Amino acid sequence: MKNFQQNLLITLALALCGLCAFQWYEQTLQRNEITTMNCILYDKNVAIQDATNAIATLNHQIVQMDARITEIKAAAATNDALVVSQRVELAQLQFNNASLTNELAQYKEVVDTLSAKLKDAYADIGKQNEAITNLVSQRDDFVKKFNDEVKDRNDVVSKYNGLVKQVQQ
Image (cartoon, rainbow, N blue to C red; front, side):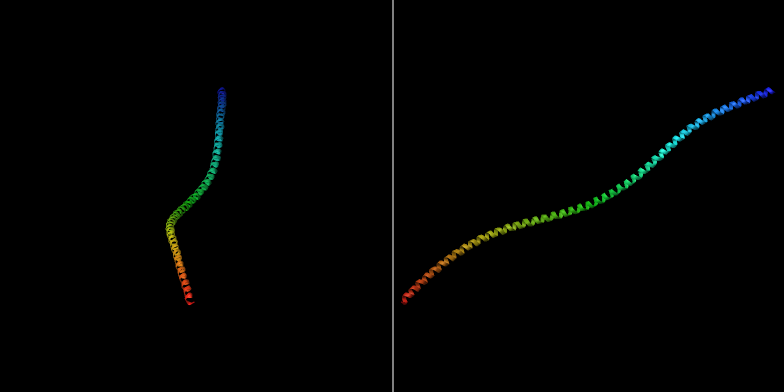
């Protein structure tokens, strides 16, 4: 029995050595797997950190873009208000232009009417000047005839006075 116990002990020792070797082999595999998993976990953590940094950067860029969009919207609103005010001003200027064009047309019509009246007046003045010239020449002729008649009468009176003096003498 001693042999059996020794054999059993050796068998158990060999089985225990095999179990230790198998456990050592399994632990080596597990450690390699843990190392691989740690590398994968590290890579994933790095990827997560990169993604988190990228998200933070993108969030910062989104905030900047939102601010820029707000500025652009404000500028667009200002531009829209400016366009509306310029359209109103343009409408007023067009209305003023139309009214001034109408006034100009009225002034042209008045000037044309006055020009026609002035031409008529100049023609009438010309006729009056001719009439006055004729009248002046007729008056001059009449005055000349009157002076001649007065001179003739004065001659007759001087002759009469000369005869009267002769008769009195």
